[in-house]
Length: 147
Image 1 (cartoon, rainbow, N blue to C red):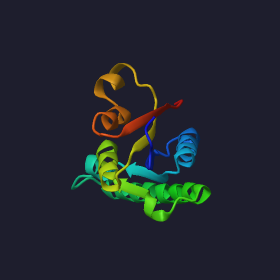
Image 2 (cartoon, rainbow, N blue to C red):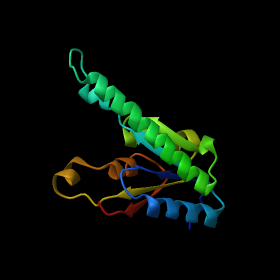
Image 3 (tube, helix red, strand yellow):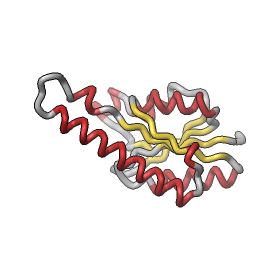
């Protein structure tokens, strides 16, 4: 079995990430590995805010609110697990791209993330877990989570 020194837990904060967090903490303890966490905010303003649209300020405000909420949730999880702030990553952009970048920047050995078991059109278009899996050289543990 592989030895993991650095484990990255990808969190979406859209639902109950407890199982994903628990698996990450357990494996980090088992291997004596450093635990990292990442959350990626997808920019809404790029997709929805355009010059001349009266609601663009509201979208920017919503984006700032989501960013602050993610920071608060990340800090709560980090405090509970004893994860130092420099290993709590909050990024902006496309989730799979930012996870790939975090893996490279931090020499991650294992990514733990949730998957919803996509089907139909969602499967055809791909999922974040699928995009992450096919873009990294380290192991990926996908935890099936309920919707």
